[in-house]
Image (cartoon, rainbow, N blue to C red):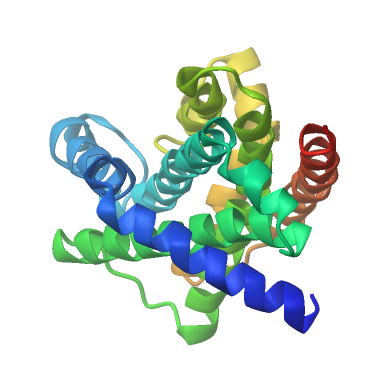
Length: 254
């Protein structure tokens, strides 16, 4: 990015972050809902789920972190949809503002908000018994992988944010993404699933990401899971970025 793009992106990022902090609905959904999922699975379902010899909260946390990100990125599409319908995006396009700055401000807002939500969920998990002997590098790898997942899914969210005709349509894309962790190793080992469901669970990207985070936090070798997870995430990131940029140029060209 040039200095011009960085300055414009910084100014628009500040605008978006102020909108997030003033939206009670956004704060409740992105921060409190994942915490509610964590407490529900640990204290209501945890006693009936066999996920290994350790504490269930230790097994569960990586999946909850993925759901935290998936919940948060739906608001990126919603905020971008509101900007499109209010005409502010068109106004920005007519002003001497670097064109990439408009979308990057929304993407970076999503990244900041989601990492804050992830931090809150980790603190709550620690308060209810989660423990990890992972070192600083392992934790940095966990947050780095979650940051990449957030960027990839946020660029996916930009596409419906630019093209949807209703608010529900803008955020509906996130429902399948939120559902995917339930058909993965996020809540129970895939070995307990019936054949076709097990095959799908073991070959979809959420399982590779969750297993990588779980191995890092449990100080076990990540094996090939991290490579598979990075391949999935980077592929989604590149494709979504290209499609989102082309869509933005098309909808703001008229």
